[in-house]
Image 1 (cartoon, rainbow, N blue to C red):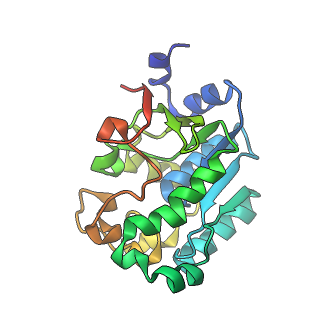
Image 2 (image 1 turned 30 degrees about the horizontal axis):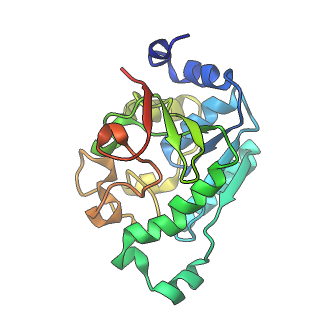
Length: 235
C-alpha cells in the first residue's frame, strides 16, 4: 500500500496498517478525550500496548484519579514517565519555572523525559487532531519523528482528520467515561498550574499556559512552521 492510500484510511484501518509494519509501538496518552478514543481503538488490535503518561507532578487531582480508574478498568500497560527532578527538587533549585519560564519547565518535565522513553520504541501513536489548534492544522496521519539522540520513529496520528463532534460521539456510543474536568468547561487539559478555561472558543488550546504559547514542545511541526518532523502522508 502506498503512503497516499494510507492517508485516506479511517483511524482503525490506519492503526492496523501501521501495526502490520512491525516494530515496537507505544501510545502517549494524557487521558484527555482524544487519547482515550485512540487508546480504545488501538486496544482492539493490541490490548497490551504501552501507554505512556507524562507524569509532570503538576497534574490536576482529577486527572490522576481518572488515569487510575481507566488503568484499572482497562487493565492498561501504563507507564508513568517522570522527570529527573521531583516538583519539590525543581522548585527548590529553579523556583516556579511554570510562571517565569514555561518553555524551560515543559522541557524538563515533558520533552526530555518523553524523548528518553521513546528511545525504547519504533512506532509512536498520538491523539493529535488538526482541529485542536492552529499549530496542528497541517499534521499528517503519518510522519517521521527524529529524537535528540538521532533515532527516527514512525509517528502515527490516526485521528488527524477527526472532529471534536466525532470524538465525543465515539465516547458516547461506546459508553466511555471522560475526564470530569471537561464538565467544568475545560477544552484542553494539561498541568493544573498552566491550564485555564479557554480564552478563545475557536481554539481549544487557548487556555493553556495563560495564552503565552500553545504547545509544550513534545510535538515539533515542520509542516506547521518549524521542527524536525518529516511528513510522510497527508491529504
